[in-house]
Amino acid sequence: MTVRGPIGRACVAMLACTALTSCTTPLDTDHAQASSQAAANSRLAEPETIAGGLDVPWSIAFHEGTTLISERDSARIVELDQDGNTREVGTVGGVEGDGEGGLLGITVKDGYLFAYSTGAGENRIGRYKLTGSAGSLELSSREKILDGIPSAGIHNGGRIAFGPDGMLYATAGDAGNTDNAQDLDSLGGKILRMTAEGAVPEGNPFPDSLVYSYGHRNPQGIAWATDDTMYASEFGQSTWDELNIIEAGSNYGWPEVEGIAEQDGYVDPVQQWEPSEASPSGIAVTDGAIFIANLRGERLREVPLSDPSTSTEHFVGEYGRLRDVTVAPDGAVWMLTNNTDGRGDPAPEDDRLLSIDLD
Image 1 (tube, rainbow, N blue to C red):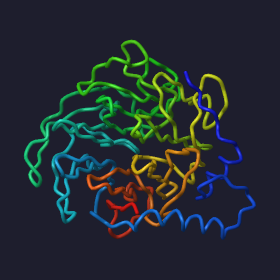
Image 2: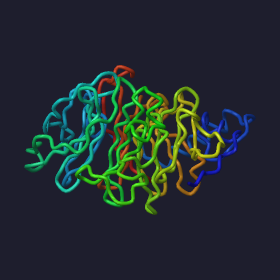
Image 3: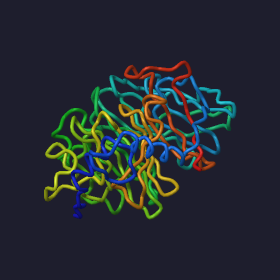
Image 4: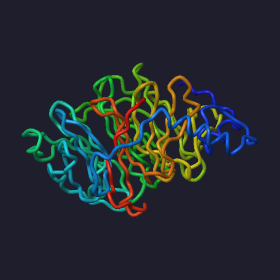
């Protein structure tokens, strides 16, 4: 197991509270911070609204040029037309969301929509055949991929994505039971890896197990760089949220440690932030950087792949809570607001899907 070396603690502390692109000392002035923030924002164009009036949107996926969005509480999958109007493609049945549960992550592969959702006493992954074309898409009935992931009103994880190896990855939270994270017999507190049919693939680190990594509290973002390095964002409890590099079979420490611990046997995050400044959810990789949507922090964070111990912040407080970020087919960065979930302060058009061009 490779245990990543920690960032200097003074540097990490400052990364948690500034938008600077490099480590600084507490003596830096407000003017210097403001200048750095202005420089950071100059890389991204001002966001443009693609669609509004979404109901607690959670995840974005694409199918043959059509944008699909999951809505957590309504359990609907909606498609967008070129004018940003929504149309219901179908409803994922059996969803019994409570608190943070409901219809969560979605992804598309080979004409199937895969959905992670909360049912009766469990989280589960199903797949649905997409039929029809843009403007008339429909979902087939559910085909089971995986059931029995622990669920609760909190810490359901819920992000799913196909990796560069063609396998389906899913983030599963500890469901409020911290023991799940270190228990290799539990699917909770893990990142899972499976085939598109839900089977254990070759190369998984533990025999006959879907567990790919463990010791997670509530991971909600996964993405890969062009060199196949896997990154994941994770909600901490009250001290540190995390950005991790995920390696097969590694233990990320929860609940024994939170954030950078420098303890043998646990992999340290490459960056950490105070939860009030972060609460990282969906992530995406493009143009040499990781983009991270933040809920409580109400900002889009950019982490350069060349130095993932540093970051810059964009649009702080401008659009409220941000749930997901992805790369659109045209290369723009798209992000979902999440202000209608009962924890935000919705603007008249919320929730929205926003597009951001990279300069």
